[in-house]
Length: 466
RNA sequence: GGCGGCGUAGCCAAGUGGCCAAGGCGGAGGUCUGCAAAACCUCUAUUCAGCGGUUCGAAUCCGCUCGCCGCCUCCA
Image (tube, rainbow, N blue to C red; front, side, top):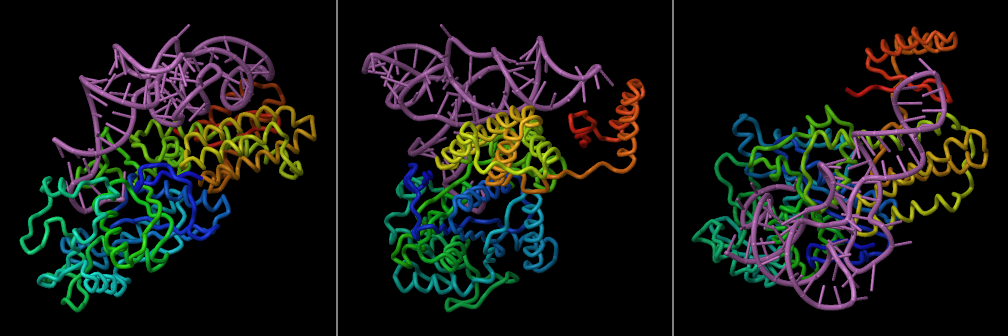
């Protein structure tokens, strides 16, 4: 398997620290508001990566944190006049609801920053003891020049960073590029006691402490949106490696943005679309298929029309699964796939093994689906073809599920009784060859939001999406 | 200003030195059907932003030009 590593800017062969095991950490969200589809992309991308490792037979340990102490949470809590913890707990619930709605599996561990303060303090103490950090008026800063590789991940030159001068000038810092590990408490803010006085952890130190707590000082994969490369992940590396003297994460994976009108979707630009809104109009599978149609490192532009197209594209394989199940639910699968059907899994895996090339993997899935449909006609008359088809459909389903598609009920909800009655009545009309009446009834059924199609196995009734 | 990415059919999007440039949506014709739908078959980029170069050979490598985007500040 090859993975593009941000650290080296190259695709590299993936070699886990422990054979057969993958330990991965992904930066979660700061819980001060609802998640938008940019968050959804990151969640879906890493969900697919995690599922694919699982599919490949790795034992996966997946950790995704919640940043539940932060300026924005505190601000919101003050606006609402409620405790910060109430705000963060509320949006953690909302986050979990959104993730369930888009078919993203929960991580194995979902640590909260506020429950790991002691680990963070211990980490900061080690950094101070090692001479990597210093205390000023109750704040603690990491001293950038003590970690020469700083800038390697993001490809930044330290001198240019200084010249860029977008860093706030704080005279108390030894270097304007030094970043906070610990922030002294201000009145009314949540704080925890420490040797340097009451305060709260800096953002970067949270992820270092929590990832090492659950995955060890060195682990396989660290991921997040590409906006986290600098400074967040850069700082994590500096803190973690300075404190342990060991390499931190070995492979860094970053996903591209969701753009809205050719611009990055972000809270600060105000051009966000909540997951909550999107799932009202689109299925989880349609959303996922749309996202996986673009490589995870490339930007993708939000478009209602594109998502609807994805829903349409999904119909063929989904119908195939339904039809095969409807015709031959009890038929035995062939012990092995015929040779002509064997290449699709290989194509799928070759694509996924090449830095999770989901667009190419989907190409294999659609071709597979078509190849199976070709056998559907023959399968009615030919038991051998039927066995191959049943086996093929099971394989197709397995591939799609490796991407998290078809995770929900494959069997759609049936029509309500009044529709059912009209369908039966229409069938009777057709038997009488009273096609005028049959067409009237079909129109009536459509008026109720359902579509009838006549197939070899009888009428197929499906919900019509507006 | 520094660093990085992108520009492939009507739309979306893979492909990064060599069989006919994947796949999806849309469109056209046909088979099937009472009709319709679905499905199936066929067709839909002599060409990869533009120009120049390297090479036996380039969408793929190099240079320049044009256009778009991201990071450098909280951000998935």
